[in-house]
Length: 388
Image 1 (cartoon, rainbow, N blue to C red):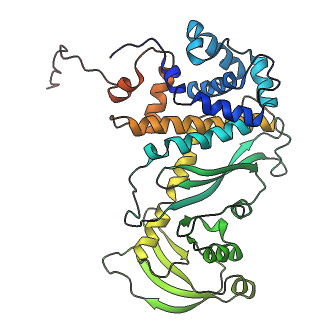
Image 2: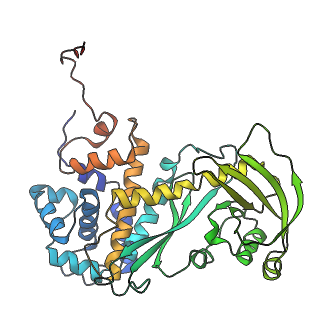
């Protein structure tokens, strides 16, 4: 494998345009009172924490100190002390990290596009919406009151199905309902929004319909409905149990959504349960509705990867700003690794690639050569002997 003069970490950081980041810093005036530790050093410190799985401010400092002469390749003059990292997390606005995530997403979006697993024939933009609670200890995070004895924050995300990453994300207190966050969003005409039944608010769903947006969700179990028309389903697709046009009959539901809706009953073999899917599209095949709801699993995978591969379960700061910074840097780290995975010719799994990068952050090897050929085979190695 060819050698190079800079570390893997340095080469990964080069994916972040310095000029774009400086513009974000100027707009947020985050370096106005930096006291020697600028926003770039802060970003490098927090991305190092995510990529190296550092567990504390001390780990961040010691880890960067171990880079010694290679710090200048990272654009950093000196490794910040643990008190400096703590101070920056508490006082520097998290908005610069949020803005950077969306800037990088815009920049690398063409390279992040992937083949759809479901609903391949549907030539529409598909958004998958969900929220996930990040538990926090009330003893350390008294500002994050959720329940009487529990604390937490909530990450609301709208995934672009073609990217597998959030096109919209916001952090709120854990008490905020999923649908109240969703009401603040707008979607392009003709797009499709897939969500679970926590988002079933008939007045909001009717607003989506009036805006030309299609939705696929689940009908609430206590909904009062009247079947207007029933349709035959394909006998070859035994997971499709029924396909019906309906009207809501409850007083307020019928007032809030006066138009026809459609329900498709689907049998989920994996979980041995029947799902009643609700949509405002009356023309797609029942199987298309079923596939769209299957695509919703992608947002669950996103939350799973975020929690398992990056540091979002424990935090190096206790202030609300510090928690937000760590959450946004975890999403920036995921975006960068997803970009590397998309560009590599080697078939990486996201978890394997994250682990391999973690083990080799300060190794001086060519990033792209290593991504494409992570395992070097020696042609002089003796052949494997048979066990029998």
